[in-house]
Image (cartoon, rainbow, N blue to C red; front, side, top):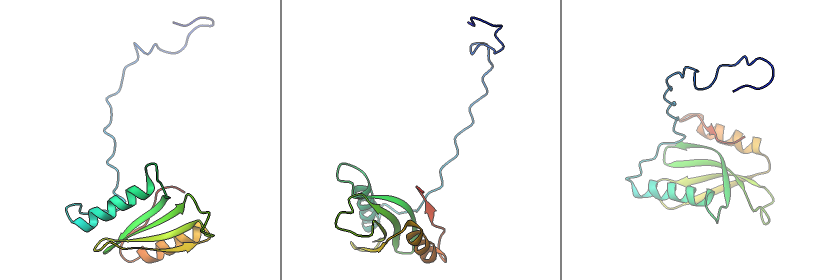
Length: 127
């Protein structure tokens, strides 16, 4: 109901609703085969490090390069680390994690792009 000057909009009850469009399927950032124990371990490790009460980093971008998951991360508690960003390599064939520290996000993203150039396009999650 409209009070005041003449109402120019149609009531929401009388407005014809258009059928909902199905939401687009999101593009996967990296495909892992969770039936393989080491790929499941890598998935669980990245999830554990980036969520929950003991979060250590925020994933900014990632891609898969053969047997390694590459992630650009921002450390959330960089008190002991002078460079708050890293390119983290999480092995998909063994329990191993390596990281290379960077002072800027652009340097970390550039290294990720260089490493993933031949095999995949890196996906930026958060700018």
